[in-house]
Image (cartoon, rainbow, N blue to C red; front, side, top):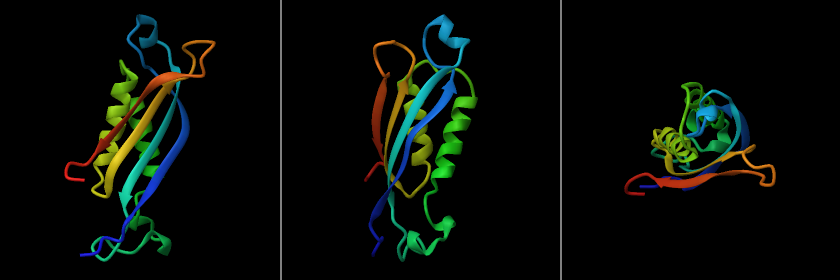
Length: 129
């Protein structure tokens, strides 16, 4: 039983406007958030199809699908915490059977003038991985 190993899918420094935060003012104004995602995915092999180098987009985990999913989560409306947004993104990524683990960082960029960002980072694993 060969699975072909694994590879990483990375979305780095995706900056989007989001309604995020627990304060009243944060519920009515968009804030810039920076999102980083790193996924460990099963590489295609005899049990999963062609290897990624064949150019078959349907055989790999596509980062455009990940980005579209993140945009959809944010478009659904206000989120209280960076941790909550990170959890939702990780859950979205783990819906793909190919994803073994997801590391997600969510940072609010404009909270303190003397800090580049504040936020949270989580790492989640598929049970049994």
